[in-house]
Image: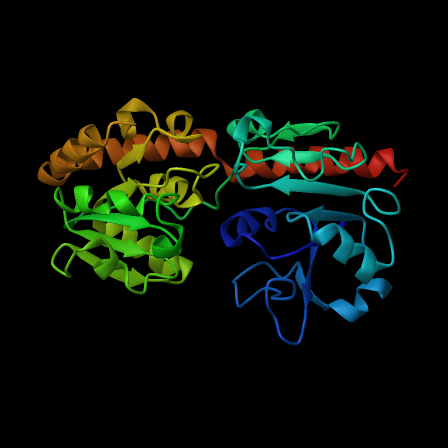
Length: 324
């Protein structure tokens, strides 16, 4: 199939474009959120950049929507209505905000566009209305076992922690920094140390690294600490487990189901998590053992092959229903 989608979430897109299809990514001269194309990602040759003004002349079998605005944008650029003139599916990456039990999904009144949640928590919390809703859990391109744990430090991956604050659990960093020096990876880290009151001896903002380098550097740290309060399921958590890292994570959203007891510690009690961080930092053998178990669980439950097979089944069913 020829699938139109936007480059929204880099890690999820990396997994998705490893399927056996052709993937069309819109580009605009100014780039930006609606036309960034590959954005320099090392993706398969089946990922093609297409200028937005040429999409109307492009063959498209299905549209994968990921933001509410994309439905109107796809209709404008394709000259066809997603869900009516061309099959479309909407991927919901995020947990709802606001009045969570009653948050209505933007596609709740669109029974013609299947709604795919990336976690069971997402499906539970969103009011999906009349949209046919299902779950396709994450699958990760396996980076391989890289864990050395040679640095007695904790790794944190987060984007824009100063702006997002409690969402990313930024307010919790001082507590974890008392257990181990923190190395923070991600985008938008400017002013983080000052904002949380930690100097370079307790917190180092490393910055946004390319995926290959990020995986290598994460695996050098002894433990992965996941502080995000409100997200479907951070893919960085699954990547850390694939690398063979032991995990300390807040027991929020999908994390309790993603991290087994023998792979680390998951709790809503921050004191328990801080103590677990101290223990893993102090015991490299224990950390390595839990990290190996984390990797086994991640390979069994978040395999790329399962993810792609689930998507193929859905896309094939949609295409055949349209008489393709």
